[in-house]
Image 1 (spheres, rainbow, N blue to C red):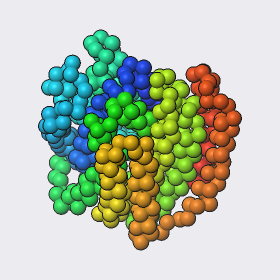
Image 2 (image 1 turned 90 degrees about the vertical axis):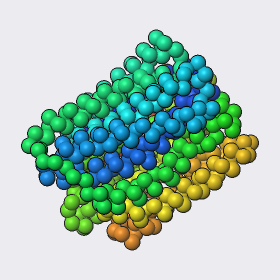
Image 3 (image 1 turned 30 degrees about the vertical axis):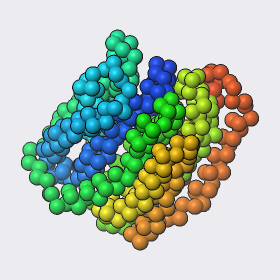
Image 4 (image 1 turned 90 degrees about the horizontal axis):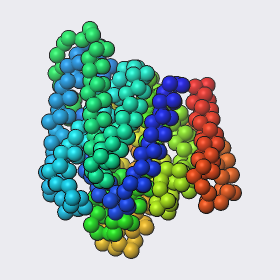
Length: 461
């Protein structure tokens, strides 16, 4: 756990530095194009890569037992590489939304292709090492990806041109390199594996198609506003909003992935057991994660002015409002994702679709309405928040008919109360320098880590 924590801490520091450089090197208007391209990458990831990757995660231990894991890895590697090309026509169709006239559209398409392939291979094959309980190797590769990615991005931007597109190129090259290294490592680790993998098409479609449908609405709720609003509202305002909400997502995902590293290997290892053990495994997972996510959201919301002062350039200081609202959006998203894992564990992915359709439809209608009424742009985070909240409530309601859910209300209320300590930061005026803000974030960050440790200890007991 210490190694995982140190690795994730270093990755968070690199992420902090990345946001600081992004906000220093580029204007809000330039970042609107950057986040527009990220939304295209996210669309591919959620609609194509994620359903296949989730299926791969689900069958990793079974494939290892059947001695065909290496064959399965290379099968999905080929599929990932071939399917990545679908991002190319999207770039040319929506080229008018990309404000990068100094860079050829073909170069932009190539950069996005590299970024998409890198993110896909890196995300799923390095995660496979974690599921295979190769935690140290997992931490090393994820940390190197973050450090080298930042170095490549800075080097390319400083050498060639101050463009967020070239920043993406550096990230894409790094993720691609270490994603391929992960594939090689898996090949070396799994030595007694020489049988051929054959995809069970019916099982794959039954498992993955509901995830694909669900992910359409996940993309709508998390990233569609960048895509839909681009060109309809002022790029500077949209860039500031996307930066604040994106930073909230980045910080939340960093902590969420730490819990994935700690908790999911054991959870996935028990999926092939009988239903009562899977039920118990999910309840433990939820009791260990939900209170922690609430503490994190409280930390991010209350300390948002200080966090923004540390992580962003002065020209983005007002984005702390979007960061605070984004932390609430992320809270509902993270808890919903944990609930959705219960449906995955029972191979009942189709049952969660309606929940995501509900939240996604409301979010989509709301974003379209905002695009036609730009004076209501400030409502965008609240629309995202409502969509995620409705999904969480709907998922919990449906899950009650599938498994027995242990009542987490008392535990959640307890840690919600303990999180009120973060309010002490509000007695300090917001207009502080970076070093004071950093000290405040660090001190209360230690308290947040204490709460995380306390939650894990009590959940075990």
